[in-house]
Length: 348
Image 1: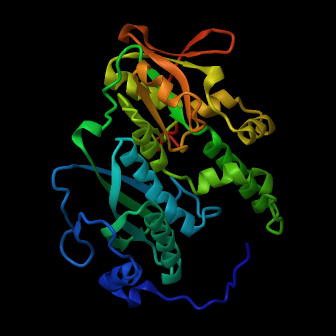
Image 2: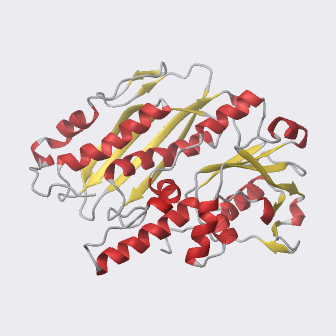
Image 3: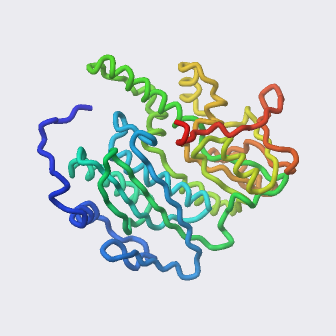
């Protein structure tokens, strides 16, 4: 994608901190009744009446969590929101507001931040959440973006990691491994570009997995589906660090064992094809890849008929007694202990 390198850029220092905030957020409209006061005062004022507030925050740092060599700023703004909304939906709650804080170096003109906030705005509109605050500051090491998501839920609807019981069914939404394989494609093309800057990559065969990396979607639709089906998760978590890590979180928090079946793990055909091309094991990618932002949850066995045959949900295993531990049951029926091999920012 080519752009005019001679476009005039606007230095953000001309606006100042408050002028910048006002400029970037002037077109955000308040949609939620619970938003009494958004941007423009010392603090946001929210009114949830009889519901419980659910809050989550994440920090994304250039060079650690994203690479602007292939991550468009608009996509980054969108993804930063999705990462946080996913945590709200993983509590079986409804996301209602976000705050966005950025630290930015002087290599970014105003137009770059407008692109970033255009992605934030697209996410807010698509998921019906209000931008209600945040902060801006300078950075000497590139771009950092922190989003805090706020949601609401009835107390009886909230799904914690700690609620699973022995003999529950383990269910996952969507398919796994696509985001990780999309990252492998992008990293490969980046290295090709370094050698030959005139090369034009053909990403069409990889469009699904690349989009899952650059523009993931939080699974608001799954929490809405569960309510429609009258299914009550006993525990829930989002898959941000890989299936194995999240299973171990549920196992530890709920004090139960878990068996997950290799042949039940949902894989898109494009993921399988990419794994063959890159000579990596698709099961390992699903277990340890991360950034899928699907939902992993447990349900009582008696609720299985409600989800049976639903294309958005796959039963991948079941819970056992605490002393049983967490295992992958391979295709040849071998029990392999699960280990947390998901992405760790402190060892990258």
